[in-house]
Amino acid sequence: MKLAYRAFDSTGRSVADTIEAANVAEATETLRRQGLFPTEIGQAGGGSAPVAGARPVRRKRGSRQLKNLAVFSRQLHVLVASGTPLVEALGALERQTKDNAWRGVLAGVREKVEEGVSLSEAMNAFPGYFDPVCLSLISVGESGGMLPEMLDRVAMLTRKRLQIHNSVVGAMIYPALLISVSLGVLAVMFIFVVPRFAELFKTLDVPLPGSTKALIGVSGFLKAYWWALLLAGGGLVTSAKLWLGTPAGRRSKDTAVLRLPKLGDIARSFSTARIARVLGVLLNSHVPLLEALALTGRAMRNVNYAELIARAEDAVTHGEPLSSAFNDERLIDPSVYQALHNGEQSGHVGEVLINVADFLDEENDVVVRSLTSIIEPVILIFLGALVALVALSMFMPMFDLTAMT
Image (cartoon, rainbow, N blue to C red; front, side):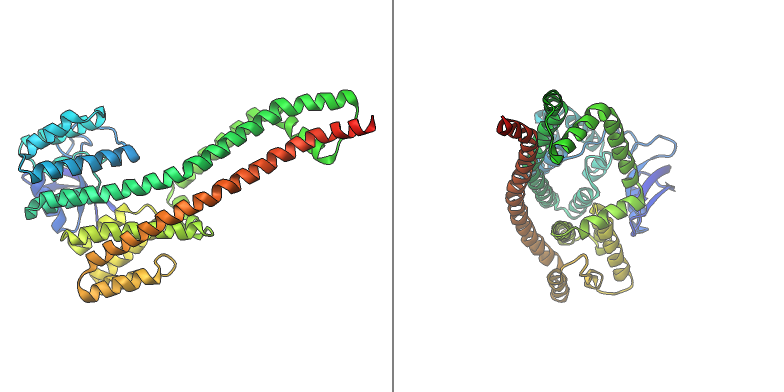
């Protein structure tokens, strides 16, 4: 039986080809022995479905998907650990979910398990909903008879990701709201209020200060060419989005983020914590080191850290210690490198990495909260000063006219 597959090799490079195998499970095992990590497998010429017979499902992103996965893995862990048959547990979770798209995914997983497919293979039919790290942990749990434990680890890992996502987004909501409201107020003032004052000043024929003339000029420009500014802004946003979608653009953006004052340190800390968390959980779950590194590299969003993991894979392949690739102070703090080095010597790399991730996550949470508490008053002061400048520039000629009379 010829099967088409899409996979990643140990360097993270995408590979698409065909393989002869009796079924999907055999093909998956063969590819893993070859150092490939499949994400999609189906009959050759049968379309783009990840597994033969899988229904196409639109990919969902963001906190809702993380929440769905966290709740699913946690509840499935409880049901399976209490002795509930897997199909019945999946059916119960399918019936109780209120998200129609997620219910469709769970129905597809349940149907494939009823057909005799393993849980990890059934979940692999929906790669937009179950990431490779999750699939690897489930596969290890099934092969080692530790499915409840692995489901618990998936739930823990997903809850951590959701917690970090929510803390960052929550910290940025209020500053973003302040900026949006203030920009809206300034736009109304420049487009509607300042022109009225300009007409008044023209009627009174009073001398205008330089700041007032400048604001009236800006107001006139905005009122006359607002459409051009919108088109230019839309063009710039579209061009930037397209450029950032290229490898060169992504590399430039990721590198620039790491070089930002203060914010770069925070970005490095978040990325380091993610590496430590994912790699630590995978190693503690007895996933082979090279496979764990490949999965960790695919979980990284910053290209610089993905390349760091690739260097670590290369070092391990050549018999060098894992920590040797992490001795890079531009990306990894020396304390984290030293902890990893000590973990290698003691033989407890997974535990050490998880402890490092816990410590970094706590620090990152404190830093984000502190930064938010500083940013909010700074934004208020800056925007308040800007509004006050506009108001004074408009009323100063009125004060001068009053003094003259």
